[in-house]
Image (cartoon, rainbow, N blue to C red; front, side):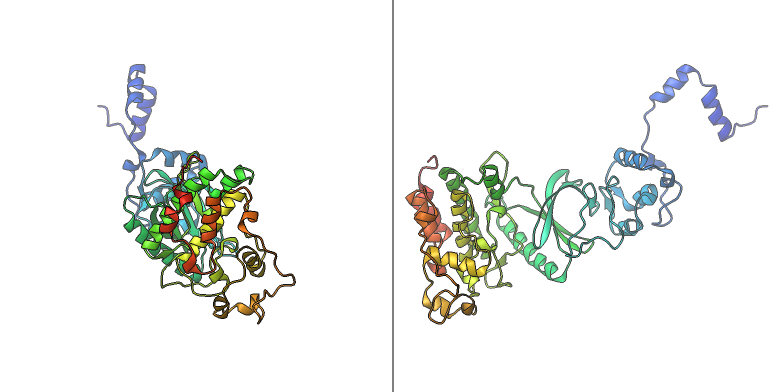
Length: 426
């Protein structure tokens, strides 16, 4: 009698004795995912039985073949030894894993940040085991922004990674509160404000997720060789920013950093825009910082250290519109004193009561009200600063660049100004 064949004998019989027809039949069988044959590990420690013999190419191939997301326990079972120890421990806090970044150069444990507190971004790596880093888009004083692919929603997005410090953590909380409020109040996404999608913490960094937009207006000027844009295009862009500022004013939000870099085209070949970067923004009555706005776009009340409100954004927009026409910033001070000098050249000396209320008046002015600089400023009217601009544009910009905040156009008034309402084809 023939005994029952053992597993080894069965394997050999399949290898050596199957007919050619039988071999083809076996080859045509649908292969099942490897994961269904794996039993759950007894702990969250990686098993040495699977990934220890993988090459990186084999691990990447297996990861690509598996359906995602995977539970963390299965990721550790299959890929644990391919990951640095800190990621093996970190995965215990992520129930679902959408992306691992197996091709990326991983940072060293404890070396996630540079001296400034910015995260060491590695293209091809993950953020929160969900977002694949594709490209670094930019870096600012408070954060850096990266282009990512969201492997859960299967879409491109922009992720803002805030610096790792207590000060910026608190600032990020304010930004998130402002963005969530604006999202609730703009359910139809029609107010020309960047769409905020979600937020998360990753290795000590607040991360904010946004829709992905295109180039900013500074890049547009650069592409145009800093020759300035046509007045019709400037008008279309300005009208859209005014819609956003009208919305912000209605919601009692101050942007606090309006400039060409923070106004983005929605698509590369269209003139539709949105404003971004609410990292300095605040609610009216809850201004946390006295030092706001990039210098070239900084309102006089901020230069003077006075209280400020939503009117600072209209001053900035006046500077932005002038820059779009001129091709370069209208007021390019190397420091605050020179910035004040340029404002005086354009707008004349400030009202005496404004100077009297300023805690910084001695930085800029003498006891007689003259500028505290070696050379007295020359007069530079707006017609000279913006040669070739239409009378409507000059009047509109001039009404934005007023010393007294109450004297500036509001967004509603600016939208009704003859320059905005004139034929957009001109």
